[in-house]
Length: 316
Image (cartoon, rainbow, N blue to C red):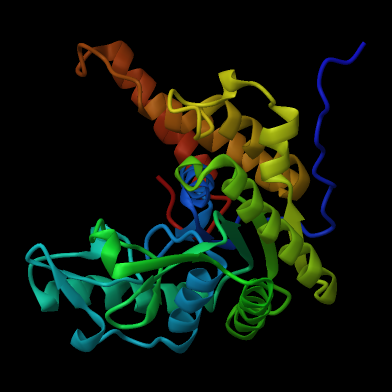
């Protein structure tokens, strides 16, 4: 007797290898996966603009990265004594123009450089809703808690979403390594502040648009992350206390399914050992000078050295 409907991720013909570069962009779920990649010591770069949720803004970010187009003072606004970019997360804001621009443009340079060596791109869309900043008549990625009277909220049209996805793919195929593989996902995080009906409409537009564009490209894939949480892990015990975000157990479950489908055997062994090493390194002791603890550290260092011999990039 079965008590749940399990969602499977088809085994991919293309595999993530230990030396591959993985670029991720999108909602906070993209950051969750990227953090696990970092722990696994896979070369990764996540969200050079900070968390971005809608396809239009994600595509706009990738255009800037593709062209290595730096921001200027004219593109910033001042709010609450801080210089802000409406294309970026609030972590880029500062009291001074030069500091904000330095953070932004350093990330654009690093993102452009990383993309040129990228083998895999993971894109996580969160919403079809977008805000227009009325004073500049500009569609934005982040409202920075600026009063709502300065914004107009609407759903992106189907054409705006499909055009954004199509251009995103063409930009990545141009700048990334030959045969780059692009994985599209829809975030399982529900945007309940939009309303439950509105959230479902928003997510459905994303899913529909992705499936409309992907058959046109051989190097693009859909990861059913949204479906895994909604249909496979269909229980609030897999959510955090806010009942919106997936908890650690759910993220780990999705990560394992993703790895089983897309990691090569060598990568899987590499990742599993690095997770064990990371756990060992987090171990705390009351006596760091004890012979037993020193022996433990020596063993961990040997394990790291063994893993380091498998790759050219620096780990741990």
